[in-house]
Amino acid sequence: MILLRALARLITFLLLLLLGLAGLTVAIFSIQSGLTGLSLPQLADWSHLADLRDTVGHGLRDLETGAVNWVAALAGLGAVLLGVLLLAGILVPRRERTVSLRTDEAGTVNARRRALGQAAESLVGQVRGIADANVKAKSRRRGGGTLRVRAHRIRAADADQLETTVVDRLTTLTGPFALNARVDVRDAERGNRVA
Image 1 (cartoon, rainbow, N blue to C red):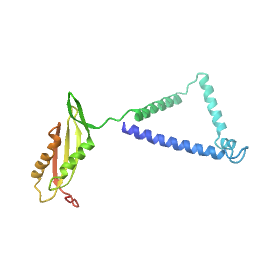
Image 2: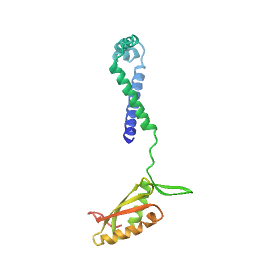
Image 3: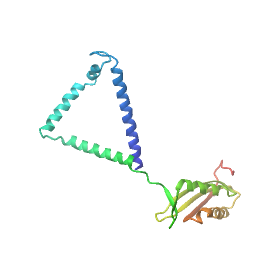
Image 4: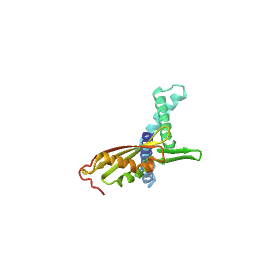
């Protein structure tokens, strides 16, 4: 679906650009009247519209007599299918990326994955000895989710102690909701400093 949305936006942009250029060309060639210079008859002559009319006329006459050009028919069908796919890419709503935190008789509590990850990063960032942290929230099919924490520690801090402290700090999120925390504490990379 993401690819269809990107393709639809690209094709829309290109078609609008082409339409704008065609409108600008017609506007420029509408400046003068007559058969020469910047006139519409001159534009039609330069665009070979008479030849195009003759070619299309022969094709329409053949179609009228019952002869079907199968290549053109398949190309038309392909264009229709591409148009339907592009419309689906634009009109079908995006699936909300949320984590279902709790469901009871009062309703369901959902949180966006990014916001949940940022809240967890804020909690992990308060732990002494952590240089920086990256948290990603993943949802489970049957509700709840997992917080994957990748934390970088300063060299003087004990990795096992920090992992326990981070898990304890995240209990404000994991305790009341159906969330699990997976913590991976690594040595800090060069340039990382404790805030």
